[in-house]
Image (tube, rainbow, N blue to C red; front, side):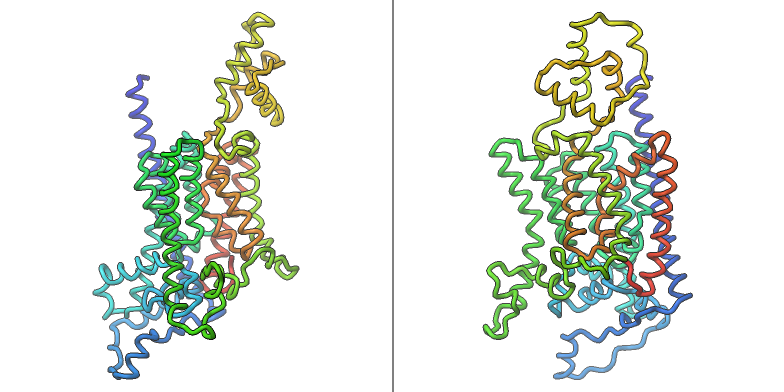
Length: 498
């Protein structure tokens, strides 16, 4: 097969995989929306307070001075009511912000990009539906459409990103399908910021690895305008420039600052809205701090988020609920760190010794001591033990003489090839796992970690491994399906779930 024919075959295969993935992504969203409608119609909500949505404070204030007639009735009130009542948990806050802006202090825990997009979509696309189902229902419809559409594109960008990192289209496809059916799927089909964040994060990282630095910075900056953990994406930029010249470091620092800027600007917006113009006695406690961070105060004061603050015996069920995703993440971190120990110790500054270099060095050293035997050229089924590979790499790096059998040299061909570009992703996952376990409400880990590509890459890898892959595949798919069914049932009816 010529190089051109092979390239055409590869492109054709990727197009086929893209269509395959698109079908899975769309089918999974239709499944989730169907489950939401089904559970809402069969069961009564545990808490119906989400339906209580009073007028905006600005509207009440203006009506008190200038009374206006009641709003006109809509043509399909039952449809509008059903859409409004389907919005639960954080979705209520996002829609309230989209309609009324930031009215209360605790509202600043929800970053503004999703409400802004919902507001724009409701006016630009669904404006004609306001007389039919009502403005709040239109906001809800816009939110659902935005989240589910963003999810489909996020799955496609994850596939493109995986191709660049893993160099294996089949593993990339399997990882992206896993994302399409991930255990936190209910949040990606609801009015939450998960889908939009995943799209901006995966898309930004894809453009970053594809060489489009400015576009990547813009996308990653928008991810920081969607969720607070979006600022961690600056680590990808920082990792690239850690070992480069000062002039390049200035550019890298500027890019990182751009990614931090939206979150910082939003904190300043909250400070000027709440703290400025108040007397000392009226100031909120966080306004008086040396570094007045509104987001940290809200998380601590209203939700009890803090280091080890969730470590109580009564929270054991929540730790059990989060244990599958935490276990999978921990296994992924350990796996990649064992394959590239020197690279992780230096935080990616030191490049790993390539497999070809290691084999070539070892072959040269051994050939000095004994002649090449043709029997050693045959493919060997022997693989190195996990603790052998780091030993050989360390000796090769130091230039020491490797005492190896010829079969061991041949066995190096079977050592897994892991690109060093995966290091920032794994380090990013380390920070997220530590935060989820020690600081956050641990049950949130299921959706908090669901935006990490490493989870799907590792799961796809072990599912495709010979021997145990089938068993692990059953376990992982069962876990995803169980959490999809359980999550859609509990979440849509206002029962606690992650």
